[in-house]
Image (cartoon, rainbow, N blue to C red):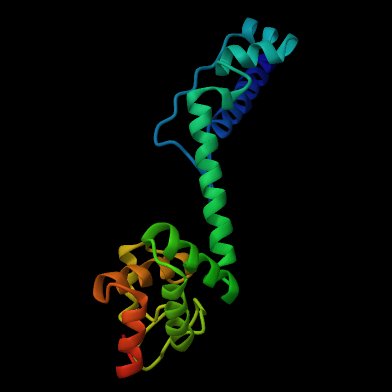
Length: 195
């Protein structure tokens, strides 16, 4: 009876470890798949796995070099993308970094030149001093672009309260939809003190 309880305990630990190693990493920690299938191997394969762990890992996972597989390459590129976005967000939390991010988005995604960035810089310096936490308690305007109501920024992403890149992307989108260019928005602001 004692041997059976030890065997059950060992298999419980093995099953728990298999479950935890099947979790996929994400930007916020671990995401667990919606469904999990755990196959418990027989005692003979367990002994073989401890004798030659690398060979048996290759048999279990298909390859030791996961990045060489299409799934591994896709996973690696996703991690690289998440890493690049995280760096961009952290950089945009400062005034200088937010300006750099906005300038890059303006030129790379919208094709605007330095003159248009200069207008945008003037506009958002007046509005928020490039502070993503800026909030006007009288009107409710929020963020770098001073969106009013602030919830409008959720068309870009729901993290608009804490993500300066979301605020920048929304602000540039708003300007191009309403005024065509940052310089036209800046001209409107100088004449009417809002945009």
